[in-house]
Image (cartoon, one colour):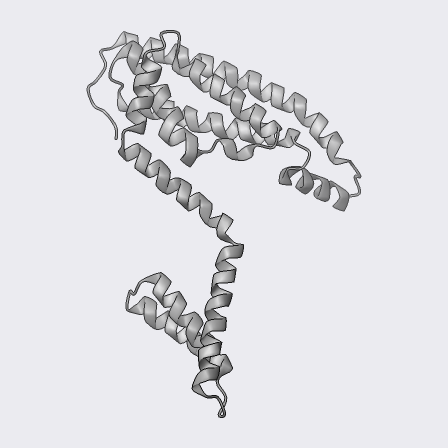
Length: 242
């Protein structure tokens, strides 16, 4: 029963709005010491129990440290954005005269889909690539041709940037034989009496990925047409979204 004191420490700590890390550490120490407590326990035994608890806490953190890497990456992206990453991306793409929003997103789509087909699904992503780089570059390509963008077209470009990442990843990763989605499909089919090999699923995913590429290429071509029709037809507004 004494080991349940750790739960009480957690409840009390969060009720007092204490630092979460301190609360968790205090709860772990309380549970560890409570588990080691006996009527014959002396200070040396409790000291050893505290050290063992801290060692177990550190081992658990070390074993799962790769889970925390994504938070380090997000912090790095935040610092780069604060230093002007998005502005530099807009300026860089504005200097490329042949670049349009549709062409830029199409190029990202092809690279994203090809990387996913090779199992490199972590090379893109909304937090790592779309928000800090792809979307600002797509907006910069449009701004270089038509000036400041109205909010409607700006958010439309951002939506297409996000969809390019989603669709390319979804239809590209199934080509890679060792991806989780292939194993999920194989397991589902086997449960329903259909025996297939992962290689067969990967081969049949190729025509689907090509169809997705062709259809999305058409969508991006239509996006360029729409931007040209709308933004050349009426004066650009000066409002700039954050």
